[in-house]
Length: 114
Image 1 (cartoon, helix red, strand yellow):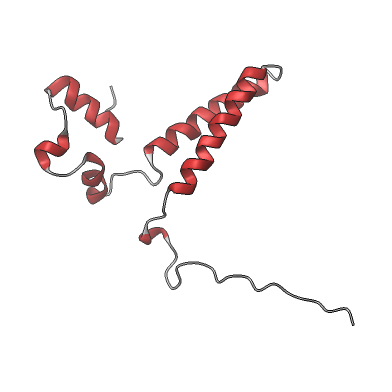
Image 2: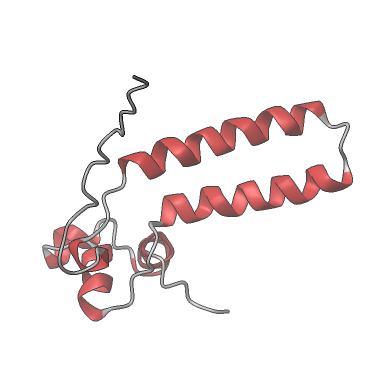
């Protein structure tokens, strides 16, 4: 079977197969930090990725079963969690374009009708 490079997958394997309950206690750093240092971490966080994956599966189900009201409701909840989580995630400094940190605020244009 294929070994997951997601930190939780690695943690589960170490816990179940090798009796390591917390990698952090052994190494002093978390699995995700080790993956980032080696350049193996994914671009989007694992929890956000899993929510998006769930939303895609739910949307696919809703295309076939349009009358499924409960799935429609669950889809709204999943998307809400995605938006909530995405709002809390800060972009890493390396992902921002060089030069400026954010776009300048837009000046409202006022038109006087004299």
